[in-house]
Amino acid sequence: MNRRNFLKFNALSLASLGIAYANPMQSHHMHHSVNHTNLNTSFINFAPKNLKLLDPNIFPQGEMLKALPLLQNESKKRNFFRAKIDIEESEMELIKGKKTKFYTYNGSIPAPKIEVFEEDVVEIIVKNKLKEPTTIHWHGVLVPPEQDGNPHDPILAGEERLYRFTIPKDSAGTYWYHPHPHFISSKQVSMGLAGAFVVRAKKDALSHLKEKDLMISDLRLDENAQISNNHLVDWLNGREGEFVLINGQFKPKITLSTKERIRIYNATAARYLNLRIQGAKFILVGTDGGLIEKPLFKDELFLSPASRAEFLISVPEGGEFKLESLYYDRDKMMVKEEPSTLFLADISIKKENIELPKALKQFKPLEEPKEFKEVIMSEDHTQMHGLMKKGEEDLKKALASMFLLNNKIYDLKRIDLSSKVGVVEDWIIINKSHMDHPFHIHGTQFELISSKLNGKIKKAEFRALRDTINVRPNEELRLRMKQDFKGLRMYHCHILEHEDLGMMGNLEVEDNGND
Ligand code: C2O
Ligand code: CU
Ligand code: CU
Image (cartoon, rainbow, N blue to C red; front, side, top):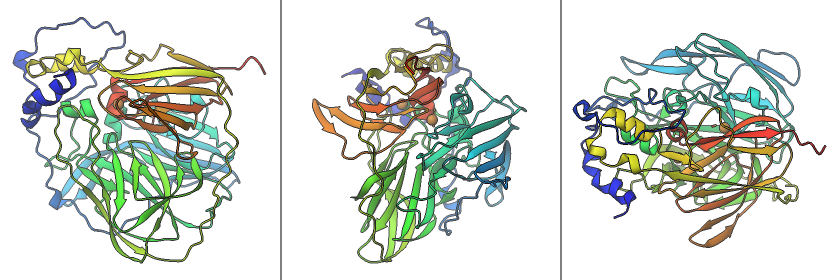
């Protein structure tokens, strides 16, 4: 039995016992001395034993979907967006008679949506009213590194900062924003911090259509309707909150027309979505970084954590439908799942005539790469051996050195790779671990060129801009990209627990001396 299966099956009894791993009586001997300079495990918290979850029946459900609230532009100037975001603890009464403590952007769950245009100047004043550091990372938006909420630039508790950037031309797309502080991004997202960020083109092939956002997040609530800490299994696989919400609502009713442009966001820490509407088809029109070349009909829409898409819906006839997520086996550790379909929402679809343009966007001819990079994703299970006998401290240490990129855990101060401004590169991302990991890089939108699995090379089906892409076990992806700004960027697994545990690297982008 390989190590993987050992972990997966011998430890099953542990998983089924719930959270019986935290036995303080056994937390003594340390087997290995760990010499990672950055090892800090104080941020790893475990949920109390025998956690009881909230009864799903008391969570309000079946209500009409509300649009996301908008972040108010306080500027009257043209091409200028100015707003305030306060980050604070808020008590929200989601469940009647029970107040849930969230972290919020401007006191709102779901967070306000930011909507700007290409070439806008954006100024956002952020006040951190939490008791811990945070940052705002504008995931996927092409902003300079010093404005991108890097973990190196925390907004400390009680402090305030201005983020200022100009939205580049031709960067219309479906983005999002979330915290990116060192070690505690997953916690802050699980507490409620994540918002939609749309960059509009003044005109594109679909700008005449009405739009709808479907922001998917998930939430874990204990029986008192409080957001609880992670289990060990959450740290291993990424946390999947039991309540999957759309625009903050549980199992809402959505009404749609076949003439609507829908933007969907996977804003969960770790939940894989494989969406289906039985009896209908998705017409994929865009990915993370904007429109694709031409519309593509799909029965299923796969969205790994942090990915976004734009689509329309096609039905032979209008009527009542269900939005569901089909089971996706991402080979989690220590859990054995029964494949099951997850119901997300009732959808009533109105059929209207629409003539979709044959071409959505013209892509420039693909440039040839001048440089190559390799990123290997792996997992070190050695310290997890004897898991059942381990105490909390040993477990934390094992976790904090388990998820690796190019054999290392993240160090804020170490430069792992370097690139030059404007130089086209191919990045080869190789997953040598036993689990799926979504790869994300800051500061650019890349194109998938090809993928390789079990010796078979597959060219990308279509051209598309993305900033996050799933990598399956043993899979190898070739991504083409370039960086436009000098400075420090991160690349990491976007299962947020893995990111916090150190599955991340620093990319230094240097001036290109040639021009
Ligand atoms: Cu959305 Cu560095 O991440
Ligand atoms: Cu990002
Ligand atoms: Cu991962």
